[in-house]
Image 1 (cartoon, rainbow over the protein chains, first blue to last red):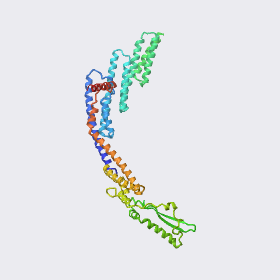
Image 2 (cartoon, chains in turn purple, yellow):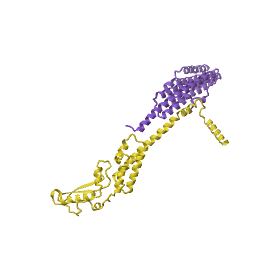
Image 3 (tube, chains in turn green, red):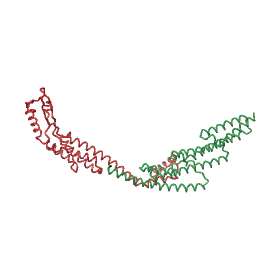
Image 4 (cartoon, rainbow over the protein chains, first blue to last red):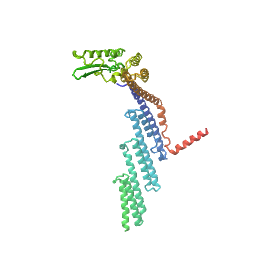
Length: 224
Length: 225
């Protein structure tokens, strides 16, 4: 049998915890609605979001996450259904934010390619997306949910390697043996860097990059 | 526990006869648990020593099982050492007994100190206020008794334990009350706290330079004012 003061405190904790969970969920829904409207406005806007806003402290998901954390610290059980709903909302928002980051980086890479980029912009894009994925993982999003976005990072890395090798093909075309050998070395280094970043060896872009390296070697052999 | 401890010494002499010696060791401190209170009260009377002494002497004088007495009156061979025998505790004055009764009746319900301890441990409905009142009464009664030089009696010892238990329980209840009050206070600010978090949506990313600029702005504003 427990002391009446302890029982009263437990009842208070239960009642107030429910109130906290209810309020957090209501506000999380409001935040999500505002974020959705902002995202719809952003689609029609041709200006890309600044990179400083990635993984920001004030992202919608982070704000809901802080509300969630506050409720937990105040004794609301994690398993409370309203809190669980709020958390799911935060995770969905975080995934949407990473999707937005990925799209913005892909647009940047396409624009950079028009300006003659040889893969550097793609590597930078991949690093930003990877950082966003890591931040989401730290936030609490499971790797199962982040798998597709992690694969998109690999695609960016592989495409960066392919584009660099394609640039070397153009560079070495008609060049001396030394130029061709240097191009082969750079191309191989780019492919190795992609492997080091986790790109699978049977990736389509890597196969294409290897085919281009073989083409440079053929040119080198024909020069001999 | 009884406050008046009676030592019964059975001593075997060289001839194999037994001598029973009863000696009253302590006449102070009536029972704390209430089980032998009446007996202890009786023993606490001023002539208790004399009665026990007379009883002892008669036993020695008549001898055991009709045998001749082995201990003559005035002989000290079968008694405890002289130093201990010579020590005679002072007769408990009425004021001490009065203080002991006050200590036993310290709780408002008139329970004895031991009962107060049990009640303190078992009570699930007391409050810091009621415990504080009980504590004050117990402390006052204990201080009165200690002031009379009776600080080592069983009643006072149990009172010490009771006071410690009450203090600990009161501290726990006060901590709980403090936490509950703080929790209620935070609950009242729920809207304000959540609004403060929500208002950060879409704001600037935390940037040390921006923080520095805001700090300097505040500094210059203070200077102007």
